[in-house]
Length: 164
Image (tube, rainbow, N blue to C red):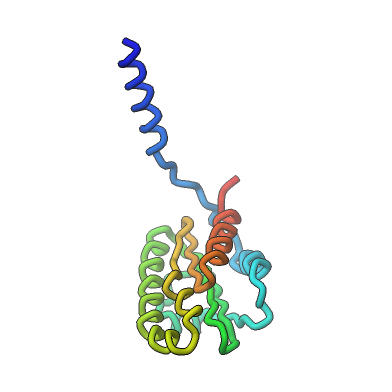
């Protein structure tokens, strides 16, 4: 009897541990507010430029309807390839599609810049190799940043978007 209770308890613990709840994310956060928070985490915001939304869609090869508010900030110095983007989509389905498009953008960037970065600045190549896209409800974030910085920034973006 004790053995059955123990097995049942272990199974119950495993079931609870394996059950992952999907977090609820806000849908009303302004991209400009998140930009201020992200820029506060970066050390070189004076050399980052913001792209116009139409330029972003062209630059990233995104259909116009995929986001109603977005920001892409990129490094203007020749030493760093730092870049990040935050997009607010109208629906989670559009956010899913945008996530795929941004992953393709990062792959194209890596393919196009790999050889040049290997010879010019291998540390920057590491940033591009480790870059990733993350989706938080209707919002999509990508970062071409130092991996530890990208992790901190993505966690901050998610923290802003978490429903309280």
